[in-house]
Amino acid sequence: MDKIYAEGHRGFCALYPENTLLSFGKALELDIDAFEFDVWLSKDKVPVLMHDQNTYRTCGVDKCLRDMTLAEIKELCPCYEQKFGDKFKGQVEIPTLYELLDLVKSVNPYFRLGVEIKEYTEETVDITVKALKEYGFFDDCWFYAFNGRIIRYIKEKYNGRTMGYPDFEMYEFENYDFYDEIGLSMRYVRSELCDFYRSKGLPIHMYCADTAEDVQLCIDKGASLITANDPRPLLECLKNK
Image (cartoon, rainbow, N blue to C red; front, side, top):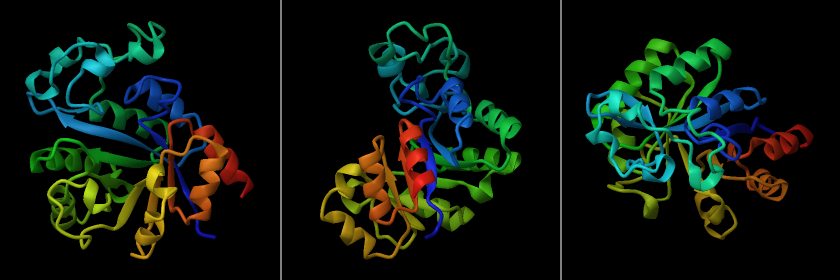
């Protein structure tokens, strides 16, 4: 059986605030192959990591990243109080892509990265790719996006390894010609749609599998990569498969 990659979702977001250096650092302590993170640009064109464009859910402040400079973004605390209470208040900040790459390179320069382009501009791709190449991570990373135009741009300009999603989940979808791999959420892994997408012959990333039962289903369905909010059940199942 081919290797199945184990990927942490937004770091180790089941136990730590997502897309923070704390979450990524804790993920790096596990025996995973990769983790996924989300990239936006600040007002002054610095790549920063957050899932949402608006900072309210994780920071409690109703502002958009694109409207703030990096200095203003750094004043926020993405401690995700509605999930963790005040446990991480004052302990985390919104990281830049460069801070994350410094961390990963210092711990494991051969680690793989799942790079989700959340801001659908070519500029975001260009700045992100430049950083990944400077740090030596570009060749082994996956690029994710829910936008067909961005997937095509990454493939045509940089020949990056792309992973898109089913056509009905994509913005500006054209076709699957620029996909190297395809991503399926557990909702679709559990449905008859999984067999339809398997028939396309593309490697499949399956997310997020946080129980042993879900992990085993992903294995049985032929996942090439499995993403988890809590990678521990995933790692245990892969160790025993």
